[in-house]
Length: 88
Image (cartoon, rainbow, N blue to C red):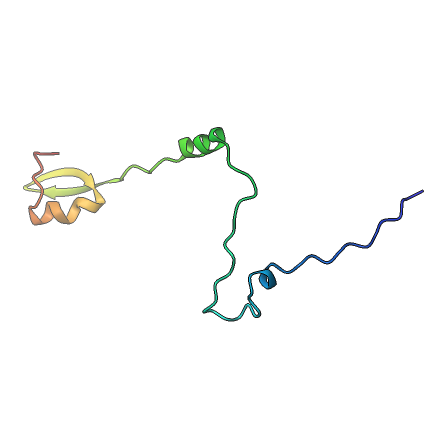
């Protein structure tokens, strides 16, 4: 036999608590999202350790008759003569 439970109570609207009457108003601020629990040091460090920046992909460029592989972001600098191929 099932227990009778009380009907669920209505939860207060968080926008009413913040004093916001209508969500459509862009000039009023909404309450900021706050995490319910603190992220542990282990989870934080584990997440940060997996992040890796992708290495720049080298692009072939011909300078002074030599073909060099340089990062794509530096190609204009090599072509203008701002960077010396001997430095790389």
